[in-house]
Image 1 (cartoon, one colour):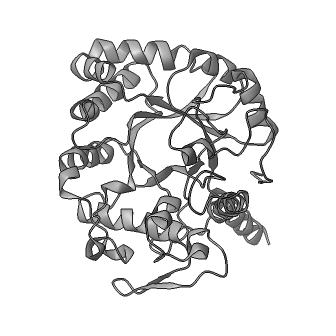
Image 2 (tube, one colour):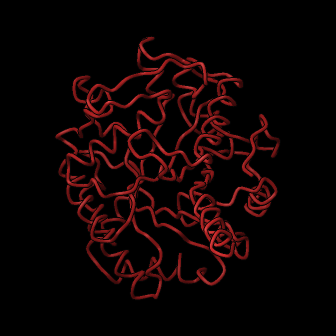
Length: 342
């Protein structure tokens, strides 16, 4: 009897840990957003336990003290800043001291995301991995070795040739991204850190010229099932298919051991093709339920998918129009539609 109870307890603990965390991205490109303190309170009121913060905003970091919210903190895409951090370890130490160490007793930092969606030809891209290395060393020196260092890529890094991107088992990275991705993958493997991926089925659907079924993109149960002859797996939604395409590309690039964190995903409620309040609610609700269910993807069954919904608020300073309407909340803190983070 005792051994049975222990076994059941162990099983329950295992089941509990398979539930993935779902966070929300806190963007600030709006002209009429609430105060930082009000935003942190809104996270707590809605049981949102994880946040992506794109730059070390001091008011937001102060408001996060004692909140128990896990934080992914960004080093922004600033050429001069990333060049300084990449070329001078003292600059990395100063950045970590000012923006992490000074808050670490009261703020739960989980990741430092150095840069966002680096692309070939962008002026900060050459400094990306060297800056990550110096931030990693600075965190270690500050006694903050538990904080992981990574960066977010976009699915545009995947080959845009249909024969190299569909079905998921054929996933490969574009050749012009390899000078970025090869050293990045090596760094992540050496430091046991996940790859962050901004993943938007909305854009895949919008750009597909009708080839992608809307139910498949919205994770609706009525969606058709897509078979992958390359691995014998079947897909009932574009979220899983997109994620497994990245996993397949990583495997071909020597990064098969890496975990993936979905650092952005969502659906706009207005401003563009297939945007509506109903579609935004359907996608985000179904995505949150799918992720928190802990089933993983067909290629990685049972592997939790830590995911960040984009975004907390509509941001009216963005362009084009559909970029303004990704929020779960309006700037007056009203929920645009019900969504359960419990």
